[in-house]
Amino acid sequence: MATKIIIAFISLIYSVLANAEYQPSFSFERYVKTITVHADGTDEVIEETLDKIETEKGIKSASQSDLSYIKGMETLQILDAYTIRPNGTKVKVKKENIRERDDPTSNGADMFSDTKHKIIVYPEVTVGSKIYSKVKTTNFKSLFKNNYIYSEVTLPYYKYGYYEINFIVNKGITLNFDNKGFAGGFVKETKDHNIYKYTYTQDTVTSSEPGMVSLYDVSNHLMVSSFKDYAEYGQAYQKLSEPKAKPTAFIQGVAESIIATSGGGDKRAEAKALYEWIVTNIRYVAVYVGNGGVNPHFAESIVKNGYGDCKDHAVLYEALLAARGIKSSPALVNSGEAFTLPKYPVLAPQNHVITYIPEFDLYVDATSQNVPFGYIPFWVRDKPTVLTALNKIGKTPSMKASENIVRTTVKFKILPTGKIDGLSILAVSGPLETSYRENQVSNVGKDDSKVAADLLSLYGETGVGKLQFTKPNSFNERYEENGSFTLDPIANFPGPAAMTIPVGLTQGRIYTISKDKPLDTRKYPYSCFGRTYLDYYTLEFPKKTRITRIPSNVIYNSNGMSYKATYKKKDNVINVTREMILDDKSMFCEAKREEQKHAFFDVLQKDLRSQIFYE
Image 1: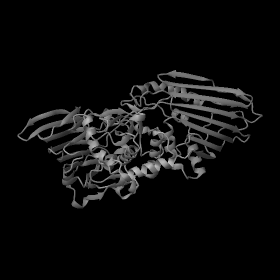
Image 2: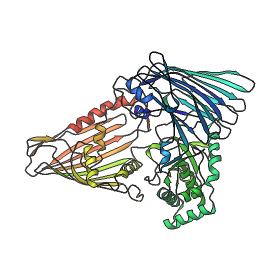
Image 3: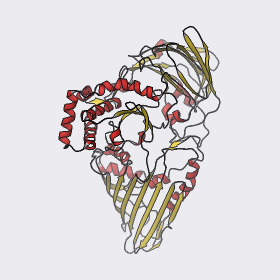
Image 4: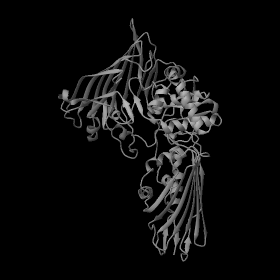
């Protein structure tokens, strides 16, 4: 089925417009889609779209339409396209303004795809213009044989004048409808078909919000599926995946070689060794050719090619585990901001495949090159999973404050010139360390001075330094960062003067949270997670400095957010301890929690503004 991609849509989604009056750049004035669903799950779709350009920004974002289709599964025809000027005259899209190209990523090393794009470039588009297209897409191969899935999620950022979706369904296939916000349903039946009609209108708009959860969790929608439940959906995926994960003699030999090289151990040690071999030796390359969106390759071919996508990594890991007598299951999951499942199974929002090992009650993501065994990446945590081989729903672990602990120790020595020498140590324990490892991937091999300058600039500081960190894929080492640095003066010396506590060459998490002002109000739930930050600072002033005042101690504890800061002076040395605990039990936070953050934020900002006075 063709997908209409509005240029610059992603930038709109993540723009922070909550504190400004939001005006959509265009609106869906009229949209009519008619879908004829065949008994084998294939379909034909006619789409008529009429959008109105509302602002200058809309000229850029909507004056082109990108229509995609999969060459091995679909055909796409543009039946008509034109611009309607504000005065009502039509300007036809010329043939040369309809361009076809390959998927832009398919030319690179990280993706192979037979997705094609037809681009409609509309002429003479101004504010007030309307753009029209009529498109026919024929799907001649379904993702899952004899099954059909369809999802429509509305966008709260645009007005919908009239939106209509019709289904003409062959009686040889039964569809289940999950509808929120749409009007309509079953209309009538003919000799061979059941006919459904759904309509939608939306007069009000809202802007996006930073950190908000997926629209699949909160928006009006129409979900259509021939699968009656997730067990049936999982079985359909398992039917594609299971034959590919059979351990051949070749795979058996690979597994034996890996275990022999690693030194063996118990079953968990073997699972760890197999995982580490995959993430070290098998590149992640998305392969979306034909039905590659859901159908993995054979484990043996993945090893021989040396690459594969998430489904391939999961298949290979399952095969290697099976070769060692360890049972596992593919786990379909969302990699992103979706925390719930639709009532009936559709392809989205589950966009990723990882592995579940029942023997250890453990999830493993074999595509994660910098995540130690036993952890999974942040973006697949606290998510429902479809365990296809186990015929049930599961859930990945959340992020707990008691497990995710970041300890930062810094020794500052203030020189008579005002410059500050420093040594820092940062240690991370718990699942949160995976994010720190990922963050440093781009710094591997980068010039030390550049790494230091970039980090210091985040806190408004300048200077020179060197940051050493555990290699992201050194899985048997606890993750640490060690910095040595010299800051340029942040206050005048000699005094009298005052200075705030510097951040130095650290990740400065408490500092960055103090700059993340809560929204006045939130409309949508947002993603969050539990963690603990412990900062221990020592500031040594020059011998002749007389320290006249230090900041007051702070204690705050409310609504799962606690902060404690203590300041102690002995002679010319000040010891600072800051402890922050954000005890979010779930990674799905309701919008009302934003209001609770204001008092916490005020206390935090006030403390980080506090100063040391000296003469």
